[in-house]
Image 1 (cartoon, rainbow, N blue to C red):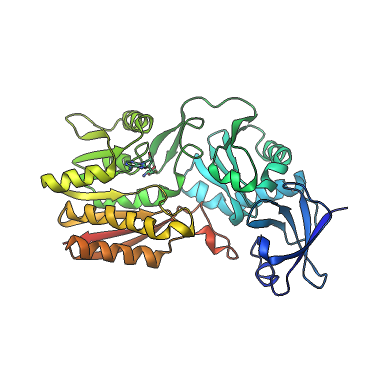
Image 2 (image 1 turned 30 degrees about the vertical axis):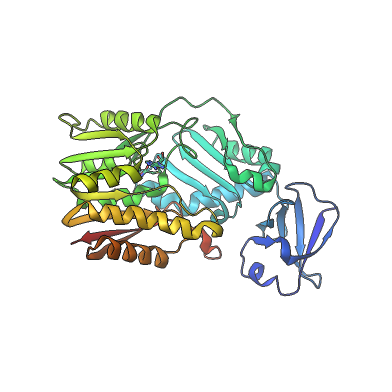
Length: 397
Ligand code: SAH
């Protein structure tokens, strides 16, 4: 018999609105002895059936809903979710000619804890919840049914797995080991993705639309691309006719790939038109400021500084610091393209941080454009937390 959980009175409200999380403090009773990741039935305090969910005994989010309909969670269920994910992305994939895209954006695609990116014929999975781990075989089977030509690789080497009581894992789940370089194309720019050795699943697909929008700010400009990873914005700047692009990151493998990416696109990187600098951005910005080195455009796309509510303040200070420094090294009339991928920091707070940075920098700052995560990183109407990436184009006087 399927195990069951019963909610504290009133705690059914968010589930009735199709939000997929059940917190540990919202549960009054557990019936049966569900194992890690096992499927349980969720009931209200007065025995009304609500959902099928995956049980996570060690996590604050004690259960994640698979379905609000009475159905088995099996291969067919995952096939349907994959087909739905493709259906809602079809236009975007065709319109933008994508050979690399986010296929499954976890909760936003009705698959809590599961991220799947597709790079050519390689499907790269991050299985981050107990339920995802429990159903791994079903998920892989479903992937091979919907994408018979594809290889499946796991990149579940993320620290958040600990909260779910899971070990970090990576390796082939189906088909072949990925080669060191899988080349995808977005907006006419070729990008080499290292699925096994790269960050996350290999590439930051979420900035695709913002990278494309950045092109209009760079023609004949002197550009500083901070936290460049494998080139990203810097490649688009070269495409857009920047006079010079300095790409800075602390990861040498990422910088090597960035240079390789510039080469496979046949961008002219002679005469120091493109520089790939192994540097800590926090220090580099101070050095430029102290030397009085100025740029026309500064791109600021740092890693996530806010990983939990507990470090919201320190994360906010980090964003303020780098944005203040960026403003200080911009010529009057220069452009700051600045982003935050911290989901726990809303757009309003990020805008306030930029305003504070402007005060500290002693510069006048005008917002001229807003950005968000690429269209394939869609959000479900019942799950606003799916929106995490925001950015601004600012003119700095
Ligand atoms: N803009 C990139 C993605 C950036 S991801 C794109 O469009 O693809 C964040 C990057 O910041 C990672 O490559 C990481 O190596 C780098 N990083 C983290 N801390 C850093 C620091 N203190 N200085 C420089 N780079 C850093």
